[in-house]
Amino acid sequence: MDPGRGGSGAPVTEARGPSPAQADVEPGGPELSIVIPVYNEGERVEPVLRALHEGVATAKELIVVWDFDGDTTRPVVERLARELPGLRGHRNDLGRGVLNAMRAGIATARGSLVLVSMADGSDEPHVVDSMVTLGRGGAAVVAASRYMRGGRQVGGPPLKRLLSRTAGLTLHWFGGVATHDPTNNFKLYRRDFLESVTIESRAGFELALELTVKATLAGRRVAEVPTTWRDRTAGTSNFKLRKWLPQYLRWYFVALRGRLRGGPGRR
Image 1: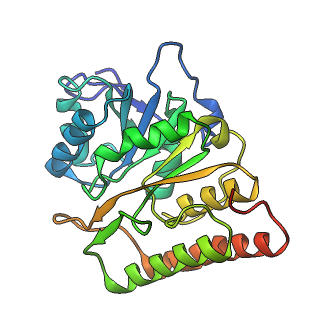
Image 2: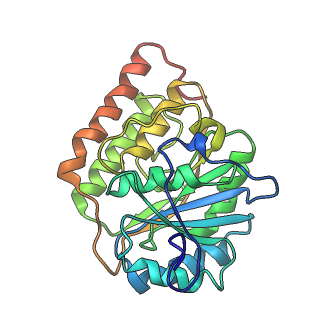
């Protein structure tokens, strides 16, 4: 068996390095790369992938990233890759965990725009084309926002909701961050911005906050579109509030300090 392919013959690639600059943008390739980190989603991933494939009109590739070959998501992706053009699996070899899965997906992405979306069905595919339009227009980061006018959040642990909303709104009003929802990982990034920063996140989903804060402090444009986020109805969330909260707080205070020191702030 070709080690770069799954048992069904669908392509599976491996991470080659942590920097997005290492991923070549192929002429005529997809404009948009959608990175989807997974952990044993199994058959639950199928409706999510179909919704992204059908609901996003922009020329795209779907990159599903798993940590190990025995992940139950892999055979589902390999089966669907025969049917859904642009879908491929990717094995993360940067180290286990959602942070490295996202980094590995970003590194292998071929598009000039890179979107991170979750495999639990919480994100809305129909807002992606609007996010792409803003990215084309120069926004370095485009957030799908639960907390701006027209957005909302359905379900989820009350404490996590309170902390997320509080952090987002205080950074918007007092930290100069141009989105109401800097912590949501459902975000689109321009490749030229990703290639200009070094990812310093150390734990998990704080990556979105780090990149949003860095774009703000660099004077890059940050934009947002409203979205409705719905908590997963099947499977188990891998969000670890107690473990990851200190990392969120790190970037929260970086943003506030940058504002106090006269950083660019909202534009």
